[in-house]
Length: 354
Image 1 (cartoon, rainbow, N blue to C red):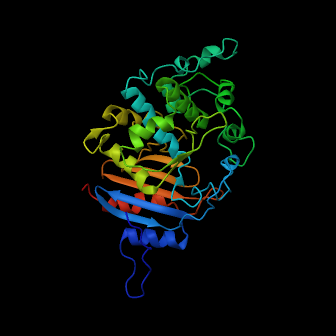
Image 2 (image 1 turned 45 degrees about the vertical axis):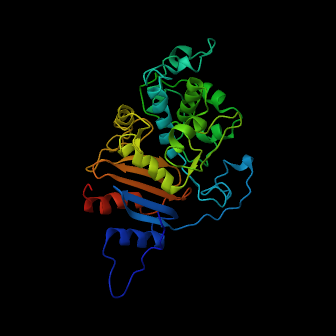
């Protein structure tokens, strides 16, 4: 997938196509810092533009991996082409959960997580905590008290506290229960961390290693990086780094029903469940809806999305057979225009299913 400089505006000919207009805006900074945009329409590459090349130092300190201003860690991993996915990691984690279910390691999404994460009998919230199912974690309805709605720069943000803790699993397990599981959507990165722990306990492999042989190697993803916590768990809430073309392969796999090179890597049943609408009315009056670690907003053209802090997107458009990957780094101030929004509103309506 070659990368070319965006077309420059010409006095003789105005920019005509949506792709030209989108790339010109991106080059002009209308979308803030955009690192890479890749759009696949069936087998055709409509866009593959690297607007910011890796520039961070080769050496990095493990202690700085959650310093989002450290150029050795963000947005690119050092001088490599591996880019932070942030919470798109959650969507990839859900694929790992599905593979563990497909292989029989996990009975199903309705299984209580106590099967793998025993509840302390002295816990005052033990009765409620025992009710948490895998589906409750997948749909962000764990019932745990969690405040991730404030800026991540705020020390009172629970996810910020999690990332600063020495034992992530213990930190999450000690959170009080706010309500009964399955009651209310409450965006919770800790729930995604527990998903990774469940996969490890159920399969005997840490999820990054589990997916190495079942997802990454079959897709030809030869290099990736996954952050680890101080106690050696994979960071399944935001720690995965991939090249843009490799994240696009994951999107392509899902649109192709879990098949890759005539091999069934993931069941269609899990893809359907993962990308189905399980939670609606997240914000009253909005189109926001949620599946299993995927956003599934109600829209004229159905778009399912993995979304990550700073402007990371993996968009799937089943009706048009389109995969969109956007890598950006706007952690402090969101740009005035949304590249993902403009692709959906300006480019997708011009496409037919190939």
